Length: 334
Ligand SMILES: C[S@@+](CC[C@H](N)C(=O)[O-])C[C@H]1O[C@@H](n2cnc3c(N)ncnc32)[C@H](O)[C@@H]1O
Image 1 (tube, rainbow, N blue to C red):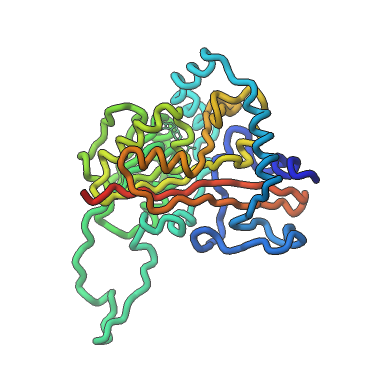
Image 2: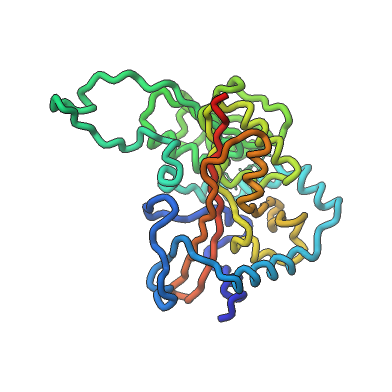
């Protein structure tokens, strides 16, 4: 199979209009640990971490993108997808409801900051008492906010696995349907979570918390759904509402992910920004773009990595190259 064919042979388990989910279930250390050393081993596991791309593969990806971006949509069509973006996501959730809910255990591997109290091992002190017996001072209240929270693939695991009674989680989405589905979920706890409808690209956020009050803002596969011209407004508002020392945790599509390569011509809105068949949109980032975006509004970069993963369909001998970007940006401590 040619290199290009490998890159685009992606018709497996990646549903049209719903391929944002990173379907990794096994536990692994951050960054991954199963590294492919010999090509002959490819089909002996379902997935490989930290896959290296050679120049030929990079060139084939560039060529595929150049082909599928050569025809762009008219200005009217581009405006329609921007103006009705929330309606397209509403329709998406009307169709899929919460069927794609994923219990994302990997969240806490990649972002342990989200639930520092998860499975903390019991400590035994020198006087033979344990941490369970020691009177402990309650941890300070923690606040997490997820713009574009959808039906709660991130929020619900945080609520479920964190035992911190002082934790408050906020989530917003511009799809009212998504927020309804989230609030109906059995694990939604209205004492510890507030979910509301808001367009995160609004210059002024109408939110139930103060400026400088949030510990962590989570952006999971949401910035890619936003028009590139409006991403800076989102980054600025993240900065405004985070406490000094607060963190933005982001995971999203990387440039040349298979989802980008599989777009047909006529779906490109502008460079690296596409519309799916269901009207929802997706951008594919480079590390430098995210560094410039968040660095440009005052954040300090703490992590900025590309997660290149090779998923394998052993039955059909297909190779699928996924590319995700994961970043952590901190608001300086004054
Ligand atoms: C790919 S989904 C990810 C949902 C969720 N973060 C997750 O990880 O499952 C993108 C979500 O962003 C929401 N979204 C897109 N643009 C938005 C905007 N401008 N304001 C608020 N939500 C937005 C969509 O409605 C959708 O729920």
